[in-house]
Image (cartoon, rainbow, N blue to C red; front, top):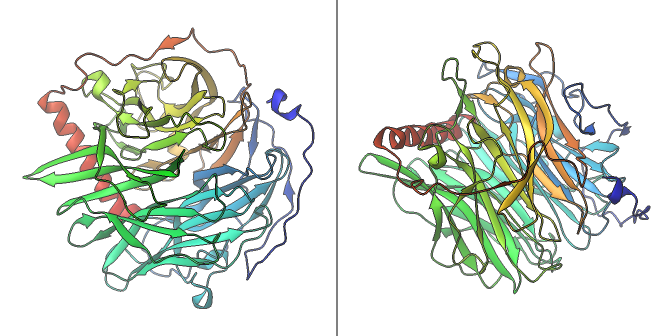
Length: 538
């Protein structure tokens, strides 16, 4: 961190705002001291909720709302100004899906202080029928930045239960032209009624061409199908092409967790999980499709690996933790910096313990996503449950992966407390040898909201500041004490921090692909649970 900040002050360039309306902003938030359970410098980004009771217009007893919970964070570093960071998260999570609203925040000093803001994605953040934000709830925040400094935020906004009569939903995108301080009125990429539900979106700005930004998600219907949908702007967000399906896995199948990265030569990769149910068997696989023409056409799918997650649970009673079991994370060095084009994907997988518990699997491609390495476990302690990984590749090719695990949960385990820690591992040799750093913990997951399982988010976030620079993890963390409360924190691990243990080599077990039948049944059970969670809990 010191090496990054020592580069010197970068002048803050103010762009001309072209806002048709936005949520309000609040003053800068001072640096928050690191909680006692963290030895790494942290700054609290989320703050006490400003939402008033009933701001969403929900009057029926359709679930439990958890005030002062901030979960499922997304973070981007603006390539136009390396001290400008923009964050998003769900604020005030509901037990049965979504949140009262998405909060946004901008920093102009590398993450030391933040201005809180919002876009009109739901009623609690200023949405109404006149600006496409007349939705009760918002979920799945995602932010990205173009080379010209324009920022984009994506929201799943919805009202009512999934596919229920009278329900509605949309994928909404908002743009900021002033470094994330204010946000334009949202544009609807797609709007549906009760016939379909759009889920798990992500948005990616082209790192070479500010005209192009790509959004991708899955669209579920009552016919148990869920193709990948795609929308693109070719004029920097002024207009968007009509959303369309780019991959349909067929009957009784769906995609989830779609994410796009851009490789040299304008090659787009869309990485996702495909879930298939045939003859009573439910399977999941990490797959990728490729485009050579800015998303106009796409290849047939390429399988990276089978996804064999059994998910996280409390060892005291097997109660499930809602983690990122079916969500992948993908990263590559920007083609603006490197022509290598190596791509890394991480996910939860039980293959390394023969189906006993999940580790963090990593695979990579060196040929633009056409072929992939065998998965290897990269978490340092493979004897315990590890979950919700995030990967980022720094400009010099150093790979970092963050995740949670339960190694410090006491034995015997308790049914009233479940302790987790957050870790980061890094590799400077392309994903073979790793070193570990402790980021924060232990914290009690029972202080997280319960949304079909204790919930910090289906994903977390991780960015890097440039060649030889810092990795900046951004994650949700429960409060101490007994209250149900979580906040989002950015942390600043030392650039050359000492590892908690000696460097270790990530090696896949020879028999990792051969799970016993009992383990495969647990994998299928978890996959089906995740499907039901998505339908009930978004």
